[in-house]
Length: 274
Image 1 (cartoon, one colour):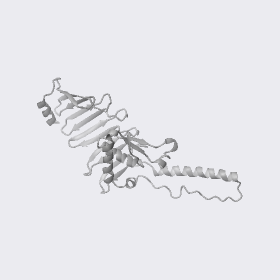
Image 2 (cartoon, rainbow, N blue to C red):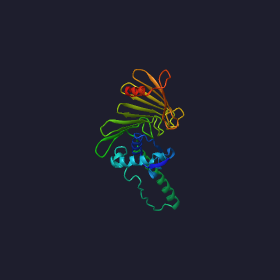
Image 3 (cartoon, rainbow, N blue to C red):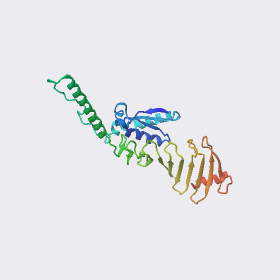
Image 4 (cartoon, helix red, strand yellow):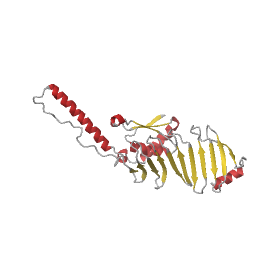
């Protein structure tokens, strides 16, 4: 995996994630959030990193560059998702020394710094409360909608929109682990539904539902990221099985319900009926 980008907060991170998934690139999201320290390291090092496979890096970098030119500054994306920190919360109160002994002054200074750290962490926590919201590009077009649901670290649902206002894709993260459990892509004549059942980042099934009533189901039983079997079911109820290569997904054979190989003429007819 190769580092593609270091977002400053989760709003930008998941906007980029949805954009990449809409282009069939599935990134790894690595957050710097540390529960033990309430995410204090994110204030120093940023939200985390987005990584992609080396084979996807060039395309991902190009898509990211195009996406940045078509969206507002990242500060605008974060507008409404974070509250400003209370001004002066990190300023120390000057303590008059008078006749205090040096050890007493040291103890007081330590206690004061501890208190300031607690106030700082508290203000950061209040400013980073998760909230649903919409994101727009520089021209005012809606590009995404974030819904947190019951999740704390990663959005439960992210909807990505095209410039014409139509939905491009919807991704779900039900278990709050940063991986997409279900992805719905909208195509001209229907929709594609990808399902990751065991939260390992690999889709076991892909169902293509056409508006005509026909549907196609792909399966990756050994989870090597290549679908090796497929069933095509037409709107009239007839089903055809396809065997695909386990290395590149190329169709090796297609058979009829009776088990006979499908002829080229029948294949053309099936394609017209989808």
